[in-house]
Image (cartoon, rainbow, N blue to C red; front, side, top):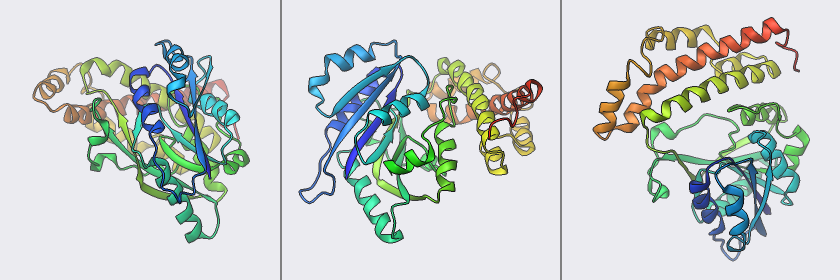
Length: 319
């Protein structure tokens, strides 16, 4: 088993350095089934000096092969990584994920265990993703209930035989904005009959800066982007399951509308409460409260994008 670890990145240089150092420090037992690995880093048009840092430090990271492209989104970046990869097994992680020394070995064991149990390799492993705001020591964060994910195929931490990605047709590069490009590919993988094998031993620690009011404009923008790509997701797979995933249901409209008091609870009216919680050392609680109005922004935006697509005649044109 030879791993190609594909890491797309955009303007994340500080945490990217920790991400790449952690992948470089992988340890394997003498009887490991891992024959080797490479790390394909795709700079998606960063403007923070990422490419200069990669080229200047390449000799310190013998497993890394850097590539760059004009800013085209994570789907295109991952596809470029796959085009350049030589491994028979692909690992996707995000560039703000810091892994343990046994990360790749754990994925290898999970894949082998799954093949033995199922009797075939029509599967992929899904490692644990633990959220942390501890930049100095991200892997010290314990697993929390809020770290649970029910996603089928999320590229924050997965390992999959390469041939299934090639058979399903790689990522759809029309997903240029934030969100859904990996879960959309997951829908196609599920139709091929691939099974998800949980592999919590392959742990990755997803770094997020501590919550602050200054982060809310970018968070709102991400929700609006995610709504637009959610409509594209639904156009490709017009099912009730996808509608639930992208929050395009009357239930979501009613739920977040009521909880946000029709949008009256928002980043302006709740700023005082959120700041007090932050000042008292409870930024995580402040972040969870902000999800109320962020979800309301998302639901409104997904319906707006869907109605716009219908007016322009683009709805359901994609099959």
